Image (cartoon, rainbow, N blue to C red; front, top):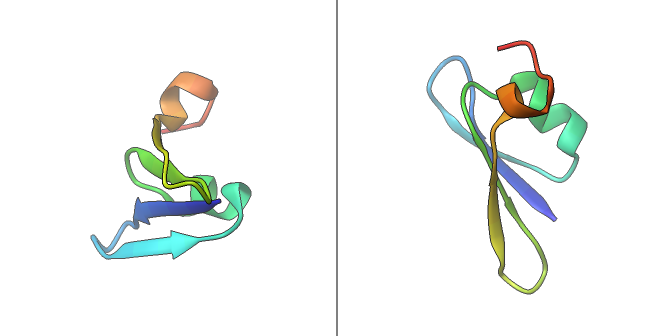
Length: 50
C-alpha cells in the first residue's frame, strides 16, 4: 500500500507506512493498494488529533 498526503508545508508526499503518513498529514490520506484501488482516510474520524 502507498499513502499520499499533503504535509504542513503544502507539499505532496508518498509513504509506505500508515503511521508515518498519519503523523505528517494535514487533511485526508489517499491509500492505494497494489490492485490500484484507492480509499480516502480522514484522520479526524479515526481518532487522530487534527
